[in-house]
Amino acid sequence: MTGDNVISAVAAPNRAPGPAWWQKGVIYQIYPRSFQDTGGDGTGDLKGITKRLEYLQWLGVDAIWVSPVYPSPMTDFGYDISDYTDIDPLFGGLADMDALIAAAHARGLKLILDYVPNHTSDQHPWFVESRKSRMSPKRDWYIWHDPAAGGGAPNNWLGNFGGSAWTLDEASGSYYYHSFLPTQPDLNWRNPQVRAAMFNVLKFWLERGVDGFRVDVMWMMIKDDQFRDNPRDPNYVPGGSSHDRLIPLYTADRPEVQGIVAEMRAVLNEFAERVLIGELYLPVDRLVAYYGADGSGAQLPFNFQLLTMQGWDAQTIAQIIINYERALPPGGWPNWVLGNHDRPRIASRIGPAQARIAAMLLLTLRGTPTIYMGDELGMVNTVIPQADIRDPAELREPGKNLGRDPERTPFLWQPGPGAGFTTGRPWLPFGNDTPMSMQRDDPHSMLNLYRQMLALRRRYPALALGAVEAVGVSGSVLSFLRWDGGAALQILVNTADQDCAASTQAGQILLAANSARNGAVSGGLTLTANEGLVVLIDEVAD
Ligand code: NOJ
Image (cartoon, rainbow, N blue to C red; front, side, top):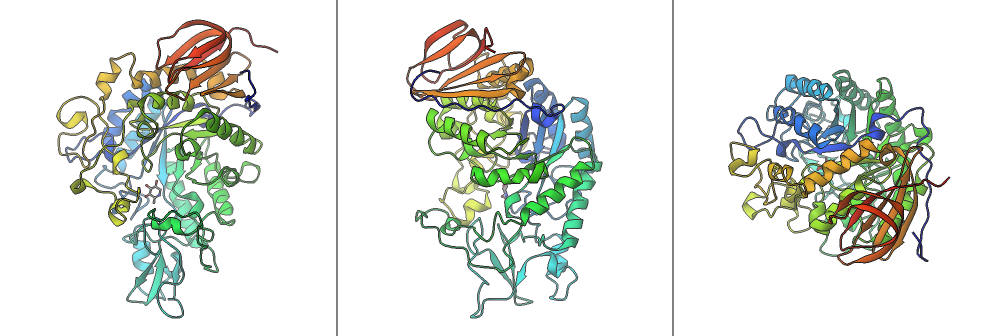
């Protein structure tokens, strides 16, 4: 682009011996409770996922990540696990998981499981044993501490879902630590037996054929061994989540965590082509540490910048792209995430028109994209009546923006009662979005935009694997180039609801979002409000 406000960033194309599937491919997150019910109980299950693999293949994604399906009392909807090596009857059984893995592989789809190493359920036999007495052989598997000198919790550490992170076990007079709910005690990863047991969990699933793991709260796994108080956050806005009153200096992103991540990765390295993904809400300079020394850490430390950014404008997005590309370590492969089961829907955050622009960005920026199920339908946050609220975070601290039910409502497969999701009563109410079957038949739907973008990525490997260059801003238009030896493409997106002039190289429009523009472009053009374009450049300059 031309103009004073041009920013330039160059990143080398991938020069690895050959790109891995998790570099080329697109990941699709399934929140299993809400994807497809086959049992009529109003909750999705594994057979339902298997049934819908055909849809995922039609859509054009490459891998699915399934949020936890292990036995669980469900106080945090599966993120409180009572057995790491089985399946909760709500979702099916091990045979259903084996069938899902086989069916996914038969369609060329990879399967990624959620791995929740930071905490178990308080019903896990390990914790049941640990809390039996101070002398229990598993006492040290969890984080126990005596009360403070004057009584009460050992220090000021706070739980992410409100209140103290310490709960008193009356019987032994000791406190146990939980980053989340009191029903989710944190494992003590300083204990070598815990490490060994949890690595065996990884091996159990790797041997069953899973292709990788998304590691829950990877950055929280180690806590300060001196139990120092966390400092106050001077930027805390009263009325926000109580957890935000303190900076989690001593409870998250501790240096020792890198060693654990490297050990996890070493377990995966014993198997071919497996991927380690980290859930990490951290600033970029800290995030990139999780690639590990010489790439010994996570291959995909989740990059949530598009999901957490304040506002939505070309300049900020350009800066995010450039800073991220610059911060990546040598060989570190980028990735982008637009939504997940913990954050408000993208279409609610930035509006339906810009959600299409965001989709175009997600699928054209350099790095592995992760799509959250339902975002391809443009689903918005569902308003949840008070009586239907299920999320423990919302129930514990109502109105503090913690509630996650609105982005977890069931997938809408077709119009009519049950929405093709269930024959029963859905565990959360349905939203009012346009169902998949109607969007499939509408060439201008969000669903078909996603599908066309995914097809373009296959047709032009430059979009999946090529370099990114010339990140530029002109008014509200963000543009950048993607190229490899075979093709160069320019992506131009108007991040505002008004027309904006931009310059482009001569080329052919391959795809437009929010407009019917097609044909050739050269030199300047005015992007209409919310318009996005993918242009195949005619001549690639040397
Ligand atoms: C992050 C998960 O994504 C979230 O859903 C869960 O509540 C917490 N970790 C605790 O496991």
